[in-house]
Amino acid sequence: MDKECAPAPKTSAPGAPELIQPATAPRAALKKKKTTLACVGPTGSFAWFAAGTFAASLAGEDVSLLPAPDLESIFRLIDDGLCSSALIPMENSRTGGAGPAIDLFLRHDLRISVEYSMRADICLLSRERNTDAIRVIYSHPRHLARCAGKLAVMFPDAATVATASDTEAAHFTAQMDGAAALGHPGLAGQHGLAALGIGIQSNADVIRFIRIERRDANAPSSAPCAPEDAISSLLFTLPDSPGALASVFQCLAEAGVSVRKLEMRPLDQEHTPDNLRHAFFAELETDLSSPAHARTMNILRAVCADCRLLGCYPRAAEV
Image (cartoon, rainbow, N blue to C red; front, side, top):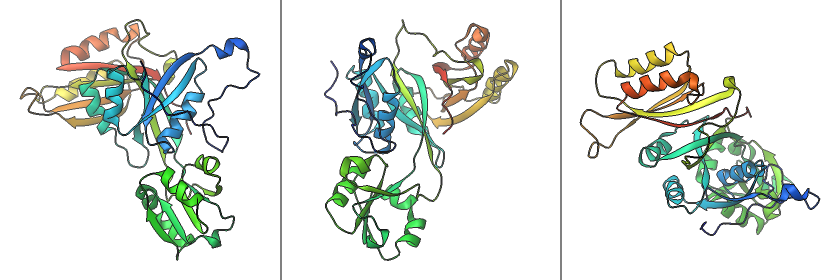
């Protein structure tokens, strides 16, 4: 049984997810598979809005969102059958960092079925219609750091107050004159605020998410897509010996496979053999589940101490 879920976002604000089916939709379109999609909470965060927008694009699913406090909680929810899948952040174009998710894939046998990208443009929200009236700005510390340069120019005399979440910042702002908040544009409609500026962070920021789910023996090993758009995620460990990683690259080169991303993570030495020190996560620009790459996968499994294909899926659209 799915765990009790937070209600799906219901707002028509720019960039906000809309999960309600129109009343005039054909009867056949209303017969959808009920799905619980976990995401990194709290409600009102960029990850929560991304999950809502992504859910709205799933034509065959009636999705409820389940916010969770962190990635580890999400992996456990799926393992325990309390939700069917999750949309989690995998990489930030500005800061990188897939490490925490990779560590969890080492401990949980889940698969990747989709990748999805979203611009993380921070919005200035306020009851005021004139920025000259703003005297205090509420925000999560992360947004304050990303917007520090522009805030110093736009509001040199305004105080800044750190909050625990974007929703808390918007809630405080909605009750005060002369206040503003930083967060997702969708918070404007939910809290009766005006969006005074979008994209006030110092640098452009795109977050790449992945949908993870339990492995199903009856499900296809890859999502349908054109070969040139396919991405495969591979997780493998190698013996700690000279040339081990080079042998993997040689195998991929001989198969004509390009590497989009490679990240190395240290292994827990208390629970792994002495000759295994690192795990590697690779994103490859091909569909390794196709019969054409059966020989490639056989070679990789022979070369690696452990080799797991996490999923094959279409490349996310550019944003």
